[in-house]
Amino acid sequence: MTNSTPPSPLFATVARAGLPFGLVLALTSTARLLSALTFPPLILIYYVGVIVIPIVAYRSARFYRDSHFYGGPFRFAQGFSYTVLIHTLGGIVALLPQYFYFKLVIPSLLDRAQPIFRQVWGSRASELFTELQGITTFEWLWTDYSLTLVLGIVWGIIVGLALRRH
Picture (cartoon, helix red, strand yellow):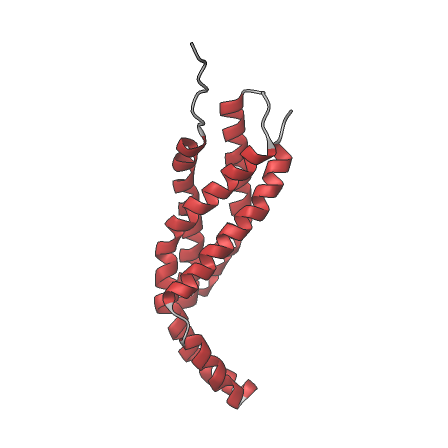
C-alpha cells in the first residue's frame, strides 16, 4: 500500500483569499478613478490602499501558514507562491475598474492636460499626446496588471523570507 500525500491547500486557499484581496485592489483602483473624475480627496483612499495591500497580503499568507502548517515547517517557496498567487488572482479582479479607468479617465485627463503641456513643452507636447493616445486600453491594462504581478513578486520574496519556518 502506498502512502499518498494530501493535496496542497494552496489553490483552494488562494481562491478564497484572492477574491477579497482583489476587492481591496479594485477599491483602490476605483478610488483612483473617482478622484480623477469627480472628487479629488478620494485619492487618499487610494494611498491608504497602497499601504494596506502589502499588509493584507502578509496577514493572509501568515493565516495560510498558521492554519495549514500548524507550527510545522513552512518553506520560503510556500509563502512566496501564496503571495504571488493572491496578487495574480486579485489583479484579475481589479481589472474591471481599471478598464473603466483606462477607457474613460485617461483620455479625458489627456484632453484636459493638453493646454497645460503645450504651454510648458511647446511642440514636443503634440508628439507626446499623439504617442499616449496611440496606446490601446489593453496595453494600459497589461502594464498595470504586470505592475501588480511585479509588486506581488517583490512582496512575495519579503513575505516568504519573513514567514519561513524550519
